Every structure is written in C-alpha cells, then in structure tokens.
Image (cartoon, rainbow, N blue to C red; front, side, top):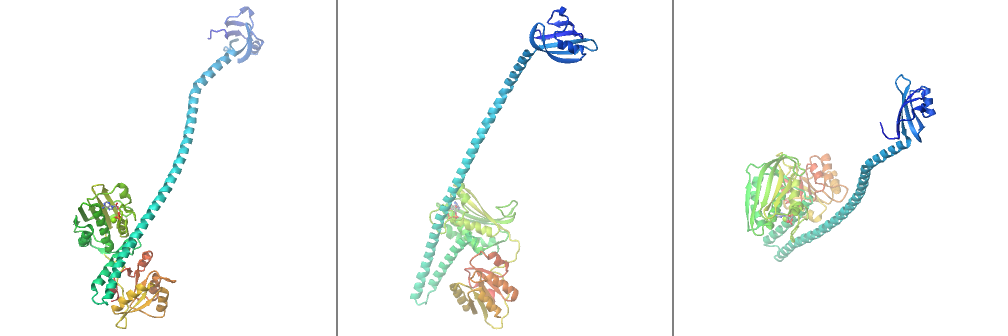
Length: 506
Ligand SMILES: Nc1ncnc2c1ncn2[C@@H]1O[C@H](COP(=O)(O)OP(=O)(O)O)[C@@H](O)[C@H]1O
Ligand SMILES: [Mg+2]
C-alpha cells in the first residue's frame, strides 16, 4: 500500500459508513465522502470506479470500489488524478527516453544508409559512363591499330608481289632476248616466283578461312620428317632441330600444304624468338582428350607440338598471339599472320591450337588434329570422276571460266595434253550448249561467274539432266565451298597444277 497522502484506501458498509480508512479520516464523519459513492453502494453495485473528491481535500480522485464477497462491505481505493497523470507522464517519458535512443539511432542509420546508397548509385553511374567511354576509346584505338596493321600488311604484300613480279619480268625479258631458246633457267625462275606468290596468297586466304582446303588422309609419322629441309631453311643454321614423332601415330585428315605452311610459320617464329640460337623441336603423339578443347568435341587427337627455348611471350602477348595482324615485330611480309594461319589450319581440320609460354624460358605451340575416322577419301581434287566413254579417240573438255587469262592458260595446257577444249565464259552459255545436246569427256567449271547461274547450279542441272556427264569444279574462293562440297564432285583449289586434270580425264 502506498504510504503517501495522495493514495487512499477504505472499508465501507453498503450504507456508506466508513469502517476503516487509510489515511485515517474522522470516523465520526460516519458516511462515505461523496454522494456518488453512497449512491453506488446503496444501489448494490458489485464493483466500479468513480471520479470524486475527498472530505479532507478538494482534489479530484479516481475512486475504485468492490464488494467483499457476500457481505455488505466494500473496499475502496482512491488515487489523486493529477498524481496518476504525473506518474503516467513519468512512465511515458521514461519509455520515450528508453525507446527514443535506439529509434533515433535506427533513423540515423537509415538516413545514413540512404545517403550512402544514393552516393553509391551516383558512383556506379559515373563508373559505368567512364567504362563505356574507355571501351569506346579502346575500340577506336584498336580499330586505328588494326587499320595501321592492315596498311602495313597491304604495303608488305604489295612489296612482296612486286619483288616476284620483278623476277618474272626480268626472266621474261631474258627469254625474249634469247629468242625463247635455251630458257630453262628463266622458266624455272618464273615457276619459283609463281610458287612464292601462290604461297603468299594462300596464307592471306587461309587466315580469312577463304582458302579452299584439300584435306586428305595423312600419316604424320611419314610427313613430319620430310619437313626437315624446309624447317632447316626457316630456322637457319644457328638453331638445332629435333624431331620426336611416335611411330604409331593415328592418321589425320588435313591439307598437307597447309600443314607444311603452319610448321614453317612456327619455325619462323621460333627463329625470331631465339636470336642467339637454341633448339626447335617438333614432336607428335596420340592423345585422348576427355574435356572439350576450345570448343572442339572431346575425342582422339594427334598432338603436334612445336617448342623452342626462346624468349617466350608475356601473358598479354600470348593472349593475342593468334589474332590476325597481331605482331610485336617491326618488319616482315604478312606480319601477324603466322599464328593466325596455324589456328585457321587447325580449326579447318576440326581441331584447335594452344600456346604454352614462359618469358625467358620458351614457347610450345600445340596443334590438336582430330584422328581420321574414316579411311575414305574426301570428294575433293583427289576424287575420282567417272567419265562417259567417248566415241572419238580424243577427249574433249568444256571449260567454263570467266577470267580469260586463266581460261587461256588452262586451255593451252589441256590442248598440249591432247584434249579438245571448248571455252565458254559463263554457266548460262554452258547450260545452253549442254541443253543443245553437246557432251564432253569433262565439264570443268569455275564456281563464281557473272550471269544467272554459277558453277554449282550447273553441276546440279547436270546431275539431274545428264547423270552420266563427268564434271569438276575449280575455285579460288571458299565462300561457296561447303555448298560445292555438297555436290560431291571433285573440287580444285586455284591455283592448281593442270597435271592433276590428266588423271581425272583418263
Ligand atoms: N615462338 C615464339 N616465341 C615468342 N613469341 C612468339 C612466338 N611465336 C609467336 N610469338 C609472338 O606472337 C606474335 C604473333 O606471331 P605471328 O602471328 O606469327 O606473327 P609475326 O611472327 O608476323 O609477328 C609475334 O609477333 C610474337 O610476339
Ligand atoms: Mg610469325
């Protein structure tokens, strides 16, 4: 019980007489202090509360009463209202103080976090803008670099072409001066120049994957040691050469000329990487690849590794080394195309190429060439043509070619070989001749020509209307190569040796 003056407790009879109160009030007063309480007690209310005053002061009080069991007695308790209000206020401020602190801390934290978030968003936007600006700058920088490299490449290629043309020119002049007698040396020199130019063109076309390849089944155990002289010529005398080829190598299906070119490119790079000499090793072994190799299906591969103990490459160089036109060297023909050709060759053969390199230790370039699955020859230049028997002893060739220089050269060689040659300069005219009933021992057609039809359309027409007519395609451009391959007729990649046609016609 509260001991202070403000609290009041009492026991009353139902007629309102106070039996005992605390604090004591004059017992002789007898009756309850208010009419309100007396009324409530006399009306036999069991419990209730009233707002009232007390006889000894005028303050308003909250008076609570309750009947004691079945007796006509009531206990009452009174509290000063303003004291209750003060206590309530006290509690309220206490709770506010207690809750206010963490609440304001939370609000402060929330505000701080929102501000941080806004600042981070601004930072992120700035960073993104900066990244885009940098990417644009890098892209245009790379574009400029590429254009510069392309310019160098064009200049180098033009320079190289001019050198070979110069050689051809001077030898033709000598031949003319000699009145075309005893000109074997000059013819050989022209042949060499032609061969070199064809190699250069092949490199350029190979890198852009436009070079029609002539894949054939190859045993690298035999082919690799035969490359010793070209590898020696490429690396020079200061570098020793090692060959380590497993005897039980699986066969692979590759264009041998492209493979040779790839090895020469690797040997040239090794030479440049070992200016003070060293060792260049070519090894070949069978490997089974469980995981995917750079987008190539897992399977059996012949792994050809070209390694050197040269200067190696920094990671930034190794990353870009396969990129066409990427070079760290100043001079050279077809600069930056060596490793691009190596990769293009591997990919066109169904495989891939990888580089392992360490600065000042050396470099290994790995060529993964898929194991040849079927021993069947592909329908390319090596394909067999079933010729229709001709009545006459001489054979006749319909040559469909829009380039008159090429046609004139080919026709001359074919005539020298003893064949009759009819030359038409587009597939539309060839179709007219064939529709007119003319037949030939062989129809040899270019793929891309002006007019409505191209060489492939001509082959399709012949397969439907003259199934017995022998036909072959020739092309220097690989865009339509897949479609041409689909026809199943032999395809010759220009420039080709006209001698190859002899076996085809006979
Ligand atoms: N065996 C190697 N050792 C060190 N660096 C190499 C080797 N092979 C290639 N590289 C680097 O890769 C670059 C690209 O090579 P490549 O495509 O052959 O072009 P290029 O030889 O014309 O520069 C070279 O410039 C060189 O920096
Ligand atoms: Mg190179």
